[in-house]
Length: 223
Length: 317
Image 1 (cartoon, helix red, strand yellow):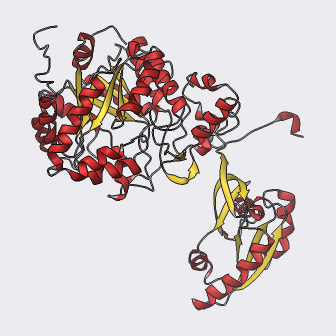
Image 2 (tube, helix red, strand yellow; image 1 turned 180 degrees about the horizontal axis):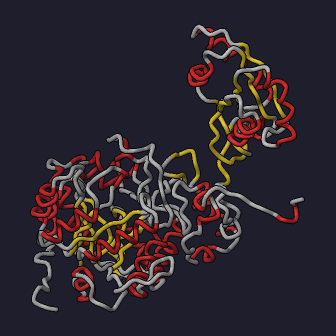
């Protein structure tokens, strides 16, 4: 899922002070899964915003709505009437949702209420961890289903740096596994350690953000 | 290993003489005198001098510039290059520039992550963006391409080729130990001519790793130079044992330093013993010595190990 976390309340109230009426818009998909932008979080954040704004001397009415998906136009359209009633929108969907609202309702200021940071899995209750970097050139088939692009701090493609700690964790964070340690363990378990001896050539990053903003056309789907 | 004569380091390795390399850390400021002063402390005691590239992710004088200052002072540098800060365009451009300046040895490294900040002792730049466009093994192959095929990574040719004697690092005792010798093999296959290792204190454990490398035929293909960091106190050994991945310090060595009446002298003695121990191992072609921010200790160590004078080829070629 796309992972996001609330911005500090102080930053949000700084942006919203002075508006009369604000729409707080959530999304029931990824950001609900990561407990940042779903209906529950919308209803939790709204009173916090009111209070925070009040402390700064602003009396702001906060309307709330949560879309099934903020990243699809048909759902975004559901907000059309509500947006007419407000001076600004605070979206706690991922960066895609925020931009969808900003594009559809371009006459209103739309602010992000969260920071979107990664493509994660919920490892266990209350713990999310990176799984994909959207590099556009998937290597999971050669790395035993474990991604070194997203999960190695240096995106190393040919094995671990010297910084693997004695307990197998990354030198950056003792609670994070060295992904190459896990790749090697899995290769060993499959009796395929020597397959990692092949030198991986420099990666073509052009299929990722480095090649410019992604724009994909599939003619068979265009009408 | 490449057949062409490229550098002094390469000549000493080829001669079969026991090789000595040492490390010089560039200053955190722009004064060339800082480099020259360090150079004066260690001139003549090693065959080549590693010049670190923003080690522990702290901004320092560039390795290329400091290497050139060493070269002008009559010391042969090993320019270190890490993959953290530059993409393949900038790295190759810097390699061509380094070659133009007469730098001939290049050690290819991944580089410490930018969060390192000198292990927390300095602020560093933890908010910086890292690059890691290519990794250290890919960098080795890029440098080899510039040298052997006169071709850039992207396929464009250069004229003439850029002659580099190529180095790489090896941390044999980091997990997974089963893979570490394979990783060494990849570096040598990619084009590494010489290998400098993470600091060795556990002689028995290192001997086992060397044996694996030797059995795999790797010691015939590249010169392995075990790293030794001159210990200065028991605390320093304890710190490295606990905090530096791949460095294992046996308890008795820590105890020995702790009970020494003169830890400085004991550290030099221990270093000399370590040099003599690794020297006995099949496939070891020399040592890579570091005395972090204490380069003044190196002459006594190297003299004590009977490794002076260093061979000189100034009359030849």
